Amino acid sequence: MVSRVVFGSGSFDQLGEILEPLRAGSQGTVVFLMDDVFEDKPLHGRVPALGQDLFILISAKEEPKTQQVDTLVARISAHSSDNPVAIVGIGGGTLLDLAKAVAIMINNKGSAADFQGWDLVRHKAVYHIGIPTLSGTGAEVSRTTVLLGPERKLGINSDHTPFDQVVLDPDLAIGVPKDQWFYTGMDCYIHCVESLNGGYINTFSKSYGEMALKLCEEVFLTDLDPEESREKLMMASWHGGMSIAYSQVGVAHALSYGLSYVMGTPHGLGNCLVFRHLEDFYPEGVRIFEQMRKKQGIALPQNVTRSCSESDFKTMTEVAYSMEPLWENALGEDWQSKISLDQIREIFTKI
Image 1 (cartoon, helix red, strand yellow):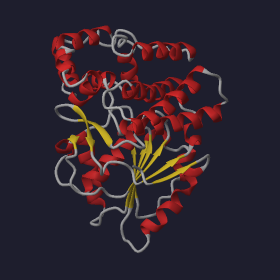
Image 2 (tube, one colour; image 1 turned 180 degrees about the vertical axis):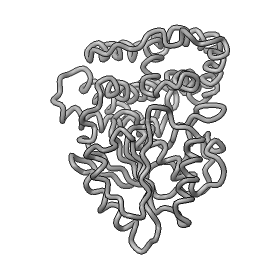
Image 3 (cartoon, helix red, strand yellow; image 1 turned 90 degrees about the vertical axis):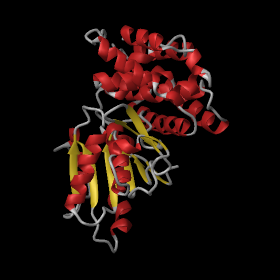
Image 4 (cartoon, one colour; image 1 turned 30 degrees about the vertical axis):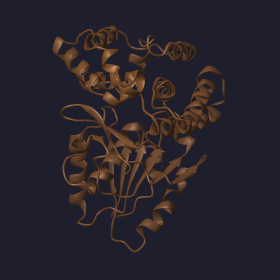
């Protein structure tokens, strides 16, 4: 679990104070990874970087990749002979996942692709801090960092992945475009549906999932004032991330990984595109999802896979099918008798 959390409006301004004891008595630097959407924006100027620190702006338009992580680690190593004292990720799920992966790989030799899987990390990560500017992915609290690798999209799932410190400032979500707000919020909602309906569920996970689901329904089905909406969605994201940290996601995420691997579809949008076609697996969840989508006036893209080749469909299907823990959580130990490659491919053709 994340051991240190700060929550509240304006709490981003405590970052310098948080970093101070880490800097004390050390020649090491702090590495800031920030979404380039904030370049030349007020938040950019509020980052407490010192002269020797490394500040890297990164585009979140594409899903994070193992090669991107390797390049960042090489850049950080070239910047200083000493390991950084902290890695700080500021942004949505892409930036948070990159920060977690970079922190791991600085202390573990090899390529990030070598660590895609469960419990493969042997050495503790560099101290890393997550500051979400979007709510819904749960990346700020999860024990995984999902990366596109040369062969698949899969997380580095380990006890060393979670952040050491998280700063939850709801004000950082002011100005998020409505469609992006919805897609990332639905990532949280879908986490909860998959967790609560899965075989891996336990009382610990269930308590978090139920709270997150309730908060999502308040945010997307009622008319809250903007400040309350931001605060509740930020806590929904936290609780939803905690729920899957102690259980597992399911069919939507398996399919979304396949879609993203081939099409480069952003994760939140990808989940929405596949989830609306999963009535056979999550009937009540899909019904409420459609209520939320209509309430918020969101029109999902159509005919996304129309231009896909047979080879594209084959790759999408195989990547999705390879997510064994997700299918087992959703369908049970005998999941292979309940879903076929042809059935998965058919869902992709509907998107």
